[in-house]
Amino acid sequence: MKTELGERVAELVELGWDPQAVTESSAALHTRGPFNWWLFLLVLVVFPVVGGVLYLVFWMATSRVTLFLRQEGDAVHVAGDAWLLDLQMARKEAVVQEQREIKERGFWPVMWPKLVAFLGLLLVWVLILRCAF
Image: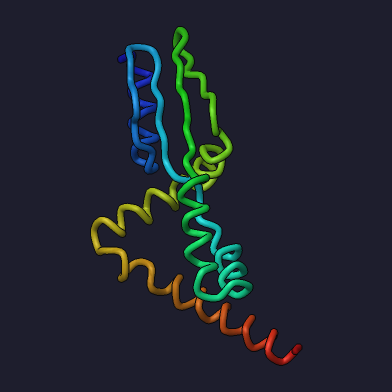
C-alpha cells in the first residue's frame, strides 16, 4: 500500500470506519450513518411500542455508508458517501476525543451527561405537547 493511502486509511479507521478491501492503490471502507434521535422519538411517539423497532430496522437497513479511496500519484481521491466524511472532518477532534474517552472510561461515564440532557429535553417537549393538547 502506498504511504499516502495508508495514512488516509489509518486516519479513517481512527474515525470509526472499517476497511472492507485494501489494495496497493485503492481502499474501500464502510461504517454506519448517524442515528437520528429526533426522528426515532417522533416515530416512537406516533407509533408507540412498534415505532422504535420499526425505526431501528429501517436504520440498520439503510444506514450503511461506503467510501472509496484511490491513489493517483501523490493525491488520494475520495468517492462514495463523502458527505459523512465531510461531517466527521468538520468535528474530527471532538469525535476522536470522545472515542478515546469511551475506550478509556467506558460508555456510561462519558455519555451520561448527554443522555440526561437529551431526556430532559424530551421531558420538556412532552410537557409542552401535553399543555398544548
